[in-house]
Amino acid sequence: MRSAFVRRVLYPLQQTLQGRNFLGLLEEWSEIQYRPPDELRERQEEKLRSLFLHARRHVPHYAEKCRFLGLGPDDIRGLDDLPKLPVLSREDVRSNFPLRITADNVPRRRRVPDRTSGSTGEPLIFYRDKAARDAALASFLLFDAWAGIRPGDRSVHVGAPQPFKLNSKLSAVLRGHTDLGVFSLDDGNTEALLAKLVKIKPDLIEGYASVLFRVALAALKRDVRPKPRAVIATSDTLPAHEPVEDAFGCRVFNRYGNREICGALAQNCPDGRGLHINTELCVLEVVDEHNLPVPAGRSGRVLVTDLANRVMPLIRYDTGDRAAAGGTCSCGRGFPLVSAVEGRSTEFLISPRGGRVSPVSLGHFLFVSRPYAGSVRVFQAEQRDAERVVFRFVPMGRASESLKQDLLRDLQEFMGRDVEVRIEFVGDIPAGPGGKRSVIVSSIAPRFP
Ligand SMILES: [Zn+2]
Image (cartoon, rainbow, N blue to C red):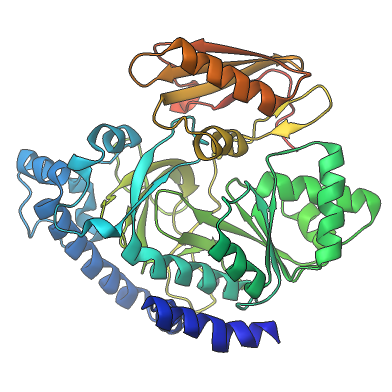
């Protein structure tokens, strides 16, 4: 009933009033996903060429790189030419933001400021493209459909609380969507969350993998089942699908996205094992240490090119994630495959009472709920015993005593009174073994759950 209302009334009305076209895009993508891989690649390469020409001409950072490397307008014709372009790091974005990484010919009203959740320990402020929001919404709706979920089916999000906005709250109510904000989970929270899920009876449960995993274990222990039709895990990778599938009695999908990049980029095939990449939205490369593509089946770093954002083009953006390239699927979809994305941190901070804080929730607290994105370059939390946590920050510019006091007050409140919080400002936080910097270093927490 509500599904029909959302599909036939609410969404079409929203499109007309706001001059949008996400339903058109969804219809187009639902059809073209079954086109042959070569045809989809040609469509993707056309978008890539256009993005490159735009960035080369209108974004100072890319104009300078192209001059330095001698790259003319015809030098990037397709995916095979991408390695000619340098990788874009977070630091490149940060040090060039806003003027040198923003296109000079896109109207200012299309700039939508946003920030990363900081789960990698390096918060980032960037611009989304208002004109790309249809592509983003269509990408979520397409992947929801793969999980058998239609607009208006009852859905629940478990993860960082979304900022309150009256119009999005109203739209959520009409769509049958509930946002169950969760920062950390101790056993009491897990039980409460499980009880809410049983009461709401959602068709779809979507949210942080680490949270879903804990809820699944609690459901199995108590033999209480929320019984959704699908579960979609985001933000970090599930250590195992089986307990979650057992507990919820339905298929579990991993959805891959990146806050800086528009929309949902890849999700498990409903008929196979790998994750199909939406090539209408992005180019996803898996590369080795020389930034060259790895052979199918081999693992490497994930670089993403956002084909939808013209305001602040991100080309070969280094996500900090790892995945294995390639694979084949017999479902008939022409979208290429990538294996489960690895390397999302699963270390936690724990409180003496057993509460857990993941890097995602910590980053969200510091940089979305609190305004530290402009003051902190990199951070790391270290826990040697349950009662004490040291937070180290590399400040942006000069660190003031008041910044230190604010961080101390907020983090003390966040961690709870049972934990002694210490703040240190340092010049650098070196990467650990494997070249990745961990946001949370713990000598006491089990890796999972
Ligand atoms: Zn497939």
